[in-house]
Structure formats: structure tokens, C-alpha cells
Length: 234
Image (cartoon, rainbow, N blue to C red):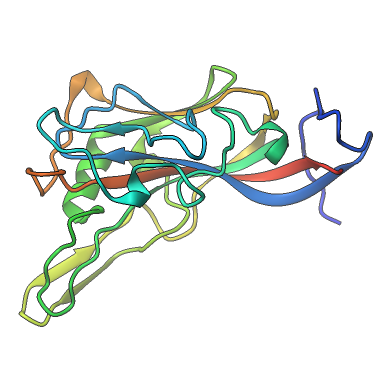
């Protein structure tokens, strides 16, 4: 049986079976929405639970996204049911790795036209060159760096092709597919510890996306943690 390094349980639910825990692999994740001229200052990812509005950064003249998956937190964008904490729903956790994945813009096969949401190579490179992230547990910084230093844990990788009308289209992602940043020593995360990933740009720098009008190419950015859970048994 594989050995897991887990935090010492504290303040367990009164309905949990005493002295027994359920160990399993899983993810903890949350997202933020980026649009043209947005200036994260910073965006506090993990700070909002399911059913509430996504945190976002957009220019003053840019329309808020009306895309349903980009407006209200649901299972595709977070699995937290309380702000900034795992709570009894998820339990205590040992964080083994972290990744940042950026929503990818699709391309219409017949025309080569880019869809109006998600990142093309243009948006991706802008985010990677201007944004930094800082992961905190209990208010204490655990790891920080430019966003390109947090490889993705999923999503499309890189490719380039010629479309039906001879336009060249490409897709690029931040790092090789499904690798993430592994920690040599797991980070302990109790169910009631505050949890944040702060996304920011330097000196008020704004994002410059390819769609400069309407809703400014709204693009999700996820932070995802690879964890061992110790959950309650009831």
C-alpha cells in the first residue's frame, strides 16, 4: 500500500466517525476570467465558492462576458463549496503539485476563423509574459514565479496547421501536456487553512488580447492542485 504524507487532522466534523479517515487522490482547483485590458491586481483565485460570480480582470470599456461557463462558478471552474477553504466536504490535503491551465480558443475548420473566447497563441504569450502567480497557505507564500513557471496539468498542447482557406493556425500551451509542477516535499493543507493563488501583473500592466472590442476575448485561467486527501468517514 502506498504511503501518504498528510496533515494531522484538526477540528473534524462532529458527524465524522472518530479515528477513521478515507485516503484518496484528487484535485483542488479554481479559475479566474481574463479579458482585454485587464490588469489583475491581484486576482485571488480559490477565494470564491461554487454558485458565485467568477473573479475577473477586464478593461473599463470591455463588456463583461455573457458566456455561462465563464460567469458563475460550477464544477468545471471550482470544486470548493466554501471560500478559500477545503472544508469538511474535501477534508485535509497534502499538496503534491500545482499547475496553471489556460482556456484555448477553437478554430472553425472550414474558414480558419478563431472563436470569440479562449486564448489563441496571441493571448497565451501575452499572459505568460506579463503575469505572475503566488500560492499561499494560511496567508504564507509557498511558491511564487512567472506564470510560465507553472506548467499546465491538462488542455491542448502545441500544434500548427493550414486550414481549408490556406490560413495558418497554431495552438500553444504553457508547458508539456499534463506535467504540472511537482513538489519534492508535499505541502500540508488543513481543511480550514486559508488557500489562495494570487495572479498579478507588474506595475499595473494590462493584458493586450487579439479581440480589442466587445467582450475582449474572454479567457479562463485555472489553478489546479494535485493532492492526497484525508476525508471524513460518516
